[in-house]
Image (cartoon, rainbow, N blue to C red; front, side):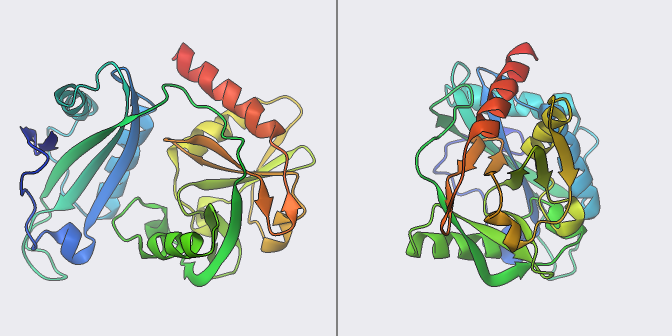
Length: 281
């Protein structure tokens, strides 16, 4: 079952037309959430990111789009798919209503919510081999739009195809200044000597929800220093550890980049603290 503007429909229903602005112009935003036994993880952060993104995109936010309203719509969708007592990946899609070309006839919006089952309730560390490479065919242009979860994800799609064709598990994206921004599906953290580093938003990286959670944990981590700074490609092979973060996987350690192999010590430490934080929240 899918939730379209508050009404539940069978997943096979034809709800979107070819004139949908998200399809026609990428005039849409989305949030990917993890819901565990009816609890939306980090919901406040997701909600405020979505509202801020809608304002940046000049979308009209409906009066009823409160935290409580959208959370209830998420849980209604979860229940309709018999996932209330399981873990689920939920995606909220928001698009401007049909009409117009580049210039819309209205800034009003519609939304839909879809869900799928996840295997694990809490985050676990994947210690299997995980190899990455730089994707250098196209570059991220730093700016406010690059921090949004919009439907304009061509570079992520092309990078994913490149990774698949070349047997990499993931790729790291570069910005127009040729510094490392993020992975295809999450933010990047680099550990070197007791410093844990991640690119600032000004470099063009996604304003990740898990990024925010990890930064808060690192700031309280005894013996380590958090640094928001640009990462050059040359730093990657000098790092002790690299890992990728997103709300579905949690923390994904990178085990190899070119000839360099990495440890997972900090990843394990932070993952344990992350799960503890979730249990106590």
